[in-house]
Length: 185
Image (cartoon, rainbow, N blue to C red; front, side, top):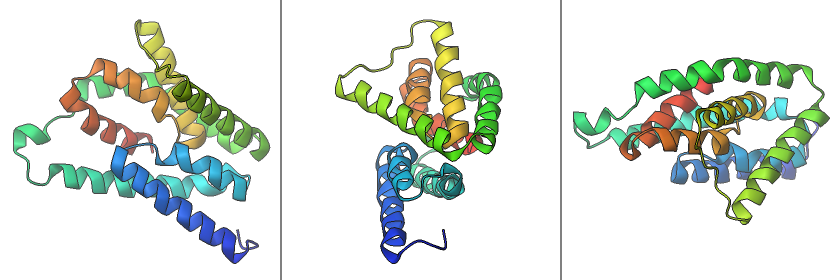
């Protein structure tokens, strides 16, 4: 990154600030929205993923602290640990496979995979076709694919969130996802 011009550094900084606002507002989505723009500056995801991981940990911790502040013990204890363990059991092998793919595949292939996933998310959003989980095989498939994408680019949230949202109570969703992001990062 030492050969970049000043405006490229400025663009990288602005992208990270913008994705921080996205993450703070939604609780997720900063990486999936920032990474395609970062890849336009430097076409190598391996350069940006450690920065995105630190960004994710920082903002997830900040959001968690803000959500805990001023709440009772009953309100804070809203993490569905049983489902979290189940998710992690399904997701650990694909996550490791994604990390291995990230480290071994050429940057052009990894960037193409990341951009194709982001394009698929965008098309699904535009045509208003949310992911619906009806069977346990769909649950396993989306969690596994989301974990693989998370391993390659930390952008698996659009595949993971619908599954978790269908399986945990609404009041447990946000905090359960925060713990999941912290573990997956």
